Image 1 (cartoon, helix red, strand yellow):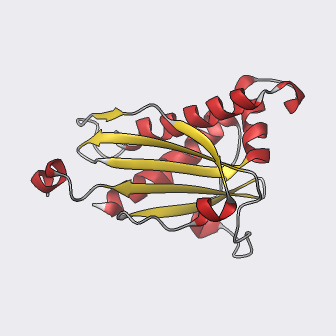
Image 2 (cartoon, rainbow, N blue to C red):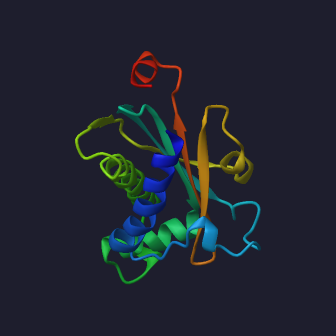
Image 3 (cartoon, rainbow, N blue to C red):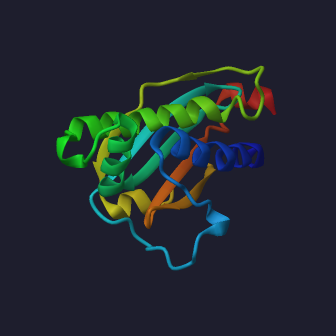
Length: 165
């Protein structure tokens, strides 16, 4: 179950970073092993829930500096001096939404999922790095020298998931 979602995430996430935010994202197996263990603060974390064949939540964590650069790219601006904090929060929420919306059709185009509204907030480096208690996996990427984490948690205890096994 996890392997199909993991493979889809490895395919979809870098493609969306590149096509929507003009930011290259290096997948985990190609990352140098000297990436920072902690995120450079401040850190933004966006979370979205999904319900369908797979049920759970997707979290995206990245440093604010990278998020601002990506927002500038997404909005087609010349520099980040004109980007409001609220625009950066919205852009990273939209990025989380786009990744989640493209993740499951990459596994099976015939299934659909209901997505919640993404919630984006500031978190500490330690919180962004903390292991989740729910089953799932985390993927670490590097973008422009910054660490990016995609964390996908699947609800394997829900009635819907038990019926699907």
